[in-house]
Length: 588
Ligand code: ARG
Image 1 (cartoon, helix red, strand yellow):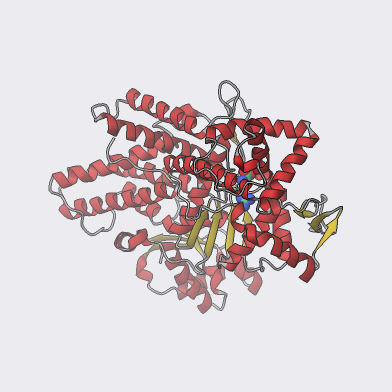
Image 2 (image 1 turned 45 degrees about the vertical axis):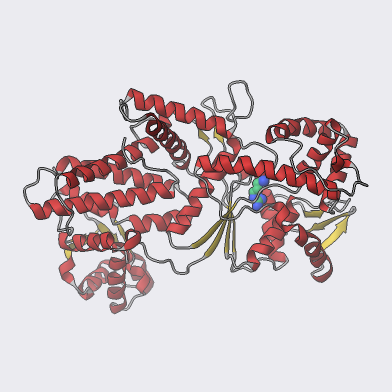
């Protein structure tokens, strides 16, 4: 149990003894650290409800507290706040419990949820570009966050691999190579094993065909027809689809691996293909929820109190082909069958309307009972320093692989400038530059609240000073080297004892807030809660390290305790950075 939960429980019991609801006992960190460490504000509201004076109630609560020896001071302040300072012995005991427990003292959540994080979501046949960055980085971090918090979590890439873009790429290839067997509807033989195109080919073809379809209605019609034929099992198209799919996945897997993003499920829109027709049928015939409108099948999701009109959700086009909304609804149906009770869609804020429609349809159709959480965990865009969407110098869309090179090069320049890792072997320096570059990129992204747009500021992100990934990575590496030097000097960590120095106490107080920090980040689905806290841990550690000269300390019990504190700090920092998807080099 965390320190705050322990105190809240003790105060809760005292409130019960005073005839008030347990929930009034909530203890939180003090807003005035110079006055107290913690505070409990419950007497104010509870007294009001009970028609008593808050200060009187607070006094009754204090009188009812048991185990008084754990408090160094308890004061009633202002209208009835209780200010709490605990003893150094109590702090040390809590720190020891954290240090001895696995997972840095984090509890198993109640209720433990089965969570699906839908993120990344690249479309087939396109190289990943900077637009996929946030979906991947934020999604990965949220997946890790829920996992660290003790939930049962799976991450699903949910590739866009079944809609109109595929139809468009089919007609585009036919234009270039009409003689390929895939386009011959009468061809019954086997299809070639090798793909007729690379992902680069597809990436080049895609914008061309999209533009043609926009300008030429007959081309758009052909693409629609091809999509329909594919979805209805035309052999040649399916074979071609497989090639497109495989060349895309091969490159995307490599990109995601470079980025340190790992999916548990490599599913996509095509995965639920067999569910589409039965689902539409069910919604039309059993539920009477879906109906035909101008040949298309739609579900009315608008409500009377909608401020802006909510268009109906499209399930099929008039030619019978399925859409993004159909596959999302069917995918959700599958996820709920598989027992997920919280689904997070980590997708660009611009898809807000789409998800609102899908969620409403899912509730209306009983696909998602109210007990299942459906959330569009949206994020804003990455802009260049001039405020426009992030592009290459030539004005093109920046590929993810190129972006990785940019940040790695910038990190290498910073390492040179700071004369870090200069005499290491080349491959190790390369690895460190990559880790630091990625750390800069991820921290730079995740330290903004996910819904804000942010400016990609390479100089600031890669700096070893300030709230940056490199600062924290360097901090963690430094702690590793402190521990290494202590080991070399024959010193071993021992039980954490009562702190005697302010900076030491400050670090302990900070570390003990880990469980609530994780909880809060989970509650608001926001990794920036972790970046903030990680920075505070690193700064508090630096203060401690400046004040407490570990290697020179003469009292061996204190020295051993400090080493344990260093070790615990490293564990907490590593846990936080890992949850952010940031690696810590062995040395730097
Ligand atoms: N492929 C989609 C896109 O590129 C993102 C998919 C997001 N997930 C979902 N279940 N719709 O916009």
